[in-house]
Length: 292
Ligand code: SAM
Image (cartoon, rainbow, N blue to C red; front, top):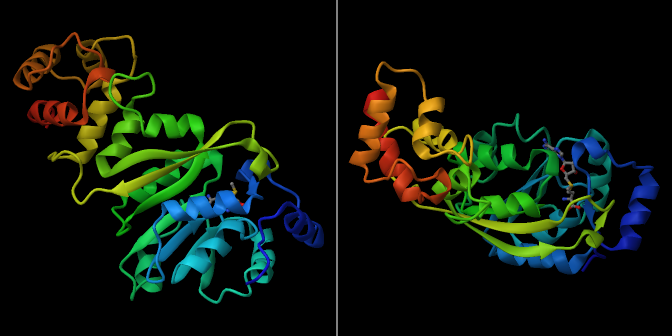
């Protein structure tokens, strides 16, 4: 087997050989601990039949472990300076394809069609750039890509919000947006010492397993998310006050909202953070006719 990329010595050598300097603005914190990488990969339950999409391969530390464990890896990297490095470090792995693009701009569905035409078990696995974790996760979920799920490293604080349960301080519109599409769990807390350079925040790995159907059936997804965001606009306000101040104007807005709350069996004095996904689904369905 080839020597691992993700050791402190080898990483240092590679960076030196190419005169590479980290760009903080691109969230470049590279992993230098093979055990952590192997653990991340194990959470993805890959087989030699699996396809993997990676976001931000860096110098290939995680990519290498993924390539050894799956059939094919397609990785999106925004930083052109890393392309010759990846070409070198990943040369032993013919089952890796690097795409030079911002993943937020990429047509991931099209790439999946082209690259995974003989693979139907695709997982996203990444050590995400922390400045764009939420937009990347939401893009992957909202585009309804045919993926089994996502295993990714991100800021612990965001991991806590994503996997939060109702009634906790971290529960909010992000928890609902992600849990609507997936079952979310934090599977590992990661110390700062396994990165170069070390990030300023604590990190965690989350596993998002895509649900066959969204957690609740709603008529209009974007209205459902509008209702959940409105409900959390000011955390100390009641549901009735938040919805009244946030939803679009209507002649009898407050009366309509009260009627919808009553029809869905939800006390108007409750706070958004106490509602389950199922209750938000009911509420959104009851509000929908008044706003369309
Ligand atoms: N996977 C490597 C590792 O674990 O050592 C590097 C992870 S580093 C946290 C994030 C990587 O994402 C960097 O290589 C960075 O250049 C890349 N990146 C940043 N923004 C990106 C974007 N919008 N699209 C694709 N890659 C991006």
